[in-house]
Length: 187
View (cartoon, rainbow, N blue to C red):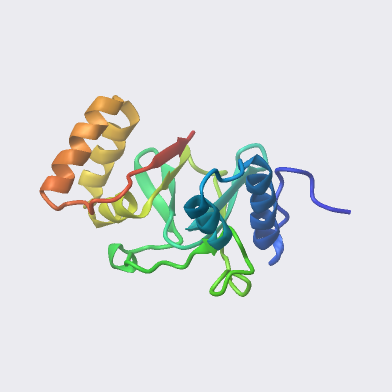
């Protein structure tokens, strides 16, 4: 008997199975390429980090699996209780592990091992989860405790225009790498 759709079993093969399911959905949703170069790119596939998160137990438990450097922060208020899969800003680099949209491609993820996290949220007074791409995650991990809290408060209330202005200033001052800056906050 298989897992229910959207529910990841806590087994070593769970993430590769979830990635395979995502690949299948991606292939079904993709339109046929209209030019030869797009067709060649589609044959080669694309590469990405993977972060899969499941909240269970009525919101009292989080399980996560990761390949690469997309980061999950477990927060109580604005305090980071756990950073996953990377715990230090020096852990980010230019060659993270990646998952291929085409597993048969040479260098694909056939032997890729997902790191796992299982964390109880039961005793937290204000639990939330923040997922962030590498440049933003590295910036948050490099910040002092007070600065980090200030940044989380800002992210919680800022408008897209305010975030864009902050990101431009951070990039210009080289406080953050010039990269995509994506943040998703689950409360």
